[in-house]
Each structure stands twice: as C-alpha cells, then as structure tokens.
Image (tube, rainbow, N blue to C red):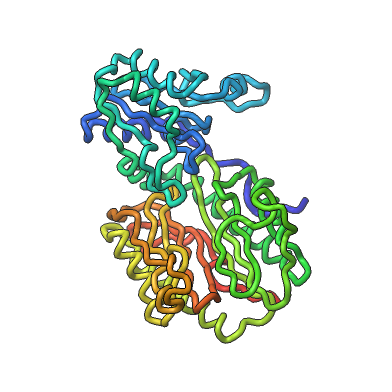
Length: 414
C-alpha cells in the first residue's frame, strides 16, 4: 500500500508526563480539600481514567493524595493481557484489580483508611454533551454509598475535566498526530465520493485510514449523512442502529461527515461537507457564512478570553446572515466538556414546526489558556439546508494553531 503520509509510530507519553498528570491531580485534591479522588472511565466516551493510568480498561482509578493510585476493572482480561507476548510494557499503574467495580471501590478506599474521608468523584455529573447525566451506573454507586456511609463524596467532574484541557507538549504531539490522520481520512472520503457510492463505502474509506495508522475513534465513531435538506446528525441510520440498507449517494446531494480520531486519549475532529456536483448559490453562501464564523473563532481564541466570548464571536456571522445553527460552532477536545450554543435561530426559520429546537446555552464557561484544543465546527443553515465545516484548533499565546485545512471549506465534487 502507498505511503499515506503519517508515521504510524505514535508519539509516546513518557513517565514524566505521567508524573505531571499525577502532580496536577494531587494539586486539585489539595485545592478541594480531598483525601482521594475516584475517577470513573467505565464505558464513558472520554475514558477519564486514562488520564491517570495511560490505558483504557473501562474501569476506575482511585488516586489518593499521598499513596500510589490503584486501577480497578470489571474484566480480568484487561490484566492478563498485559503479559501477552509482543505487548509494549511500561504501564503507569502497577496495582490493578479485577472484580465488581462497586465493591472494589469500597475495599480500596477502606484499605487506604478512608472509610470516613473526603473523596472526590469524577463521573457522576459529566459535562460531556453525550453524557450530561453522568456515567457511573446506579448499581456501582449504590454499593459505594451503602457500604461507606461516613465518606463525604464531592462531585469534581468539571474541575477535573478543565484540568485536563491544558495540554502538555507531549499531549500536543499526539493531538497533531491525530489531526494529520484525520486530514488524510478527509481526503480519502472526498476521493471516494461520486453518485452511486453507498454511505457505507464512504464510512469504510474514512475508517480504513484511521485504523491503518493505528488510531481509533470515540463514540459515535463516525457521523456520515447524505441527501438534500438532511438535518439528522448522528451515526448512520443503517448498520447497528437499524436494519436498513446504506443510502446511495446521488447527484445534487450534500454529504456530511464528522470524524473523531483518537490516539492515546487525545482526540481531534474534522467536519466535512461536500457537494456532489457544482455548488448552488445557496450552498456557496452557506459555505462562506460558515467560513466567516470559523475565521471569527480564530480571531477570538486567545488566552484570557472566555469560552462563551469565543462562542458568541463565532455565532455572530451566522446570525447576522439570517441563518441558524444546529450543532455547536465550537467545543473543547480531550475532553469535550466545554460545548457551545445549540439550535440558535431555529425558531426564526421553523416557528413551531420544530418547536423542540429551542436554544441551548453553553454547558459552562471557562478562561481560555494556551494549549487548549478545540473542535471548530461552524455550521450555517437556511431552513433544512446546512453546511458544516472545520477542524481542530489549538489556542496559543499568539495566533491559534490550525491542525486541519481540507475540511475547513465546503468541498465541491465534480
């Protein structure tokens, strides 16, 4: 196979990076007066435990203020696999235990002498847009609360997530690596587009590039949609979700994709809109409006600015043009905790026709600092016609660092 342009040698995260993360976490404990923190990854989209463990085991990490952390997983497979031939070693946490997660949290905290301590929890009230009601199951948490009645549990999902947002140089190297893979996957998508191609073939072309480069994806893996006046935004209708055939792309369609490339816990995103055939005047206009919002975001994304200020700056060109937007123009990456406005202006286009599309404010606000990564995904809609573009952008002390280019304009496939 021809060289795809990205080295499959993944930028490694060092023990120094592990120690940096652990030190930052213990500083967070001190700031909140906590004796320990229980960080739940479980089956959540962001795998928060990976930040402390350097691996995703669909489990929990218990990090005490003054003792080594402990990894807890439901699956012994995750432990025995560490010793398989050919596995790269250097695991960050040596103490890993398997069993029912709730009882394991109880026994670990008890072993640490924290039966009456003050313990932080990450995962009860996640701010991720797909996990707004948390990721810790009732069966786990009810056991913990019942068996540790004297522990004062403190929800710290938001402070922990904000701590993760400011990237180290090693994390930025991984982020750039992911963005390069995402850029190549966008090119592969465009190359396969033509009338008669099924959405499943587009999906396969994108995922082939991601997987061949040793990367993966976050849920929902990949968004692919096509058609005229298509507002649906989520996984394809076909496949695991519904027993229907993949849609066949036709001349005159718009084809959309949202890529979520992940490696080592670092995520980048790319937003593709491609017109199958020449751009109509309206599509060209929507593309120009979305690009104006992208450029406004570049001007506003500066250390010291607030996230909401950046959201407002990106929304202005869209609303001034008389358009509305379905999805957020911007959200943070690794984790996707800061999420911009949704559905703003829809009422001006639909009235009560789509009454459930009421404006939703940002999940929360925060000050931008250098090395935070964001998905720029400005979108402009007139009624049901939509253009959504963008890629990954990193806040820097000067002008932001753009990690993608191809998906940052509407693409004409002729």
